[in-house]
Each structure stands twice: as structure tokens, then as C-alpha cells.
Amino acid sequence: MRKSFKFWALLPLMLFFAFADLMAQGTGTHVQPLPYREVHIANDVPMPYQYVREADVMWSRIIWRRIELSEKMNHVLALPATPTRGTKSLIDVILDGIHTQGLTAYRARASDAGNEFDVIMTEDEIHVEMGAASDQQVVEVEPGVYDTVTVTTPYNSASINSYLVKELWFFDKQRSVMDVRIIGVCPIRKYYRPDDFDQTSPLYKKVFWVHYPEARPLLARSQIYSPYTDVTNISFDDIFQKRFFSSYIFMESNPYQRAILEYETGLEVLLESDRIKTEIFNFEQDLWEY
Image (cartoon, rainbow, N blue to C red; front, side, top):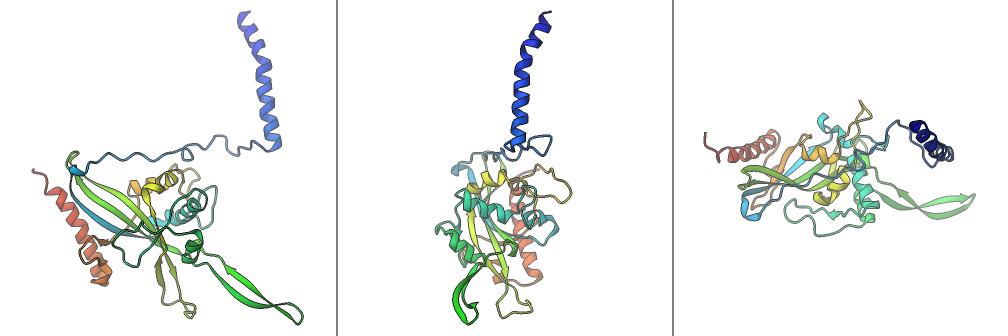
């Protein structure tokens, strides 16, 4: 009898909440298209870095990598071309972060060496670097009546075909590990001159730099797009931190501040990239005795 009494006592309360939920769905204020709530990525936070003391860093080197989006492994950074199912490409995530969440963009220098994070760019400057343009044109608004109007050409985020990644490799003697920290990410735009009608001579421009530690919270909440499944549970921060991308070394810190392309050509560029990679690997291995 006691159990029956408790059930009937709670029945009005249960009916009230069920009715309130139906009313909310009926008014469109609570529409859940999936049978579960998507909270894994939306509420995710980046995993904190291991604390490192300056005194424990016994060796370090700055490396610039280039990630080509044309490579199969890197397609996830360029997909989708337009926002789909709540997912965006990496460049759209970064641009949205700059526009709505206060992410800072810094002017990209002609040289790849030095401090990339000293000159802040405005959104208008970013749009121009992305290829947006405005032009004055004379149009006929009425028969025999002409007027000058401003025609605006928006930027196309699909023009981003690669990224530069600046990272610091260092050996932490306290933990006895070779570690890496990504410092910044720079999208590179591919475009053509107006008189290159056949588009045979592409040009490349570094658009802006974002400081990766500042962008990590945004990237950790942004799920990648997969053409094979709607559920990936992998964020852009996971892609970078777990090194799920293909790249080659574009430049290393050197007294001449020269990129590899400035002193090597063709196949020699990849060979020099592999030489630098092997040098870092050998440095760590030489610290151990077997």
C-alpha cells in the first residue's frame, strides 16, 4: 500500500513535466532532432599541457611546417566546403572565431622568421587578404540614366589550399622526453592574377597568423567533418595534438632566416625536410645509452 501511495503521489508531478515538455516541443523552443544530446564536442576543453620550466629545456628548435590540403590525409581540414550538420572547415572555424568570439588575427610577414604575433589585423583587412574586393562600376539604372555603384566581391574560403604551422621542439630533461608545442597557424591562399585567364601560374599568399594556444579552446569545441559518418567525436585540436596530419618541414630556425625553398629546389626540398626531421630524431636517440 505504501508503494502504491507514493506512486499516485508522484503521478501529478510526472504528468506536469511531460506536459511541459510537449508544450515546449509544440512551440518550437525545444527541438531535438536526434535521440541523444550532442554535448561531447560542444562542451569539450583542450587537454592542459605539461608544465615545463625554462631551466629544464636543454635543447630547442623552431620548425615551420606546411600542410597541403590536397593530400588525402589532410582533407578533413578543408571539409566541408560549406557548413554542414553543424561542422565547418578549419578556415571557417577560425574566421568565425575571429568574427564572433574575439580570436585575434596577426599580420603575416613576408619573411617567415621573427615574431608573427605583434601586429593585430582588423576584420576588413582579413577580408582583403582573403580576396574580398570592391570596385566602382557605372551601371544603367534606367533607360538613359547611369549611376556609379560599388560592387563587392566576397572572399572565398575555398581559396585556402594549405597552412603553415609554427612549432617548438624541445627536450625536457625533467621528464626525459622530446616534446613539441604548436605556436601558431597561418592559412595560405591560392589565387591567380586577373590577366591569367588560363590560370596557369598560381600565386600564394599568407593571410594571417593565429596564436594556437589562444585558438585551442575554439578548436577543441569544433568537430571535424567526416564523409563516412555523422559521429566522429574528433575535434580540430585532436587533429593537431595527436599529429593526425601530413606535412613537410618548410623552414627551421637559422641565422640566415631562409626557408628551404630559398636554397633548394625540386626533390631536394623534400630531402632537406627529411634531413631536419632525422636530425631531431637522432638528437633524442643520442641522449640514451643502450
